[in-house]
Image (cartoon, rainbow, N blue to C red; front, side, top):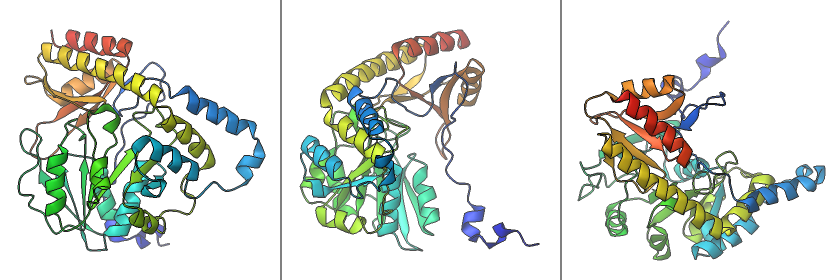
Length: 354
């Protein structure tokens, strides 16, 4: 009998697919590998979830708001844009998928700098498009001029993963002017940075900014993200998204969370302070640490392979992310955890390196 898998598209059957970070089920693991916020989400979001649950089965019987009207209004007030500039998504990965479907034809070209978010290549392959990369410079900048001007869509994570580095808005303006297609500034970690690219959207440049509530708001398990773009473009993107891509529970929690900017400011201050402490301590241990504007740090130890340190930390129930890229030394991406978690990590590293 012929296997049903034999009918798959050959390019799907042959691709590796995106590999998320490990999600262990063991309670005593110190999980510093997927950049989750180390603190609980806003109490306002939890209250919104509780209030939703009190509504009972009637709330789940009905479809959710397909465009997230209340969330768009709350986010618009916070971000200084109009509700029509906002598109909701089931996590920012959903937004990236919608943009890929909307702009990239089969056989088209997608581009991004490298090393960066590994999902971009997966999205290109799913679309039947060619994926092209441009190496960051040695100091994590962009080459000038940008060499790939004909791409249908260009992704730029900012802050970048795995490095945590930021490209300035002046450089982004120059890049947007050089490209022959839209620039997507993927700001998954912007809540921990000192700058963002929203002003480029306000200026009318061909730029889309994508955000998530997974990192800065501690809601990775909720799956909610959004894009900020020209309102006319948002109207077009709504045609492409799944009809009800965000459920009613996530909409309620996300609306409460994004309105709670006092919580965000306090959380950001704690994470940034621990990030600074972690980076300085790693440097004292002999690591080469890249200055980060995200909720993680990128580092490597000159005299020990990253693979060995990753494995030995895992033996001690500490997970970090081992990252390998062509033409770059492998490194460790370490999520900023709590103060107690940071103490544990640094103590184990100190023992491993002495």
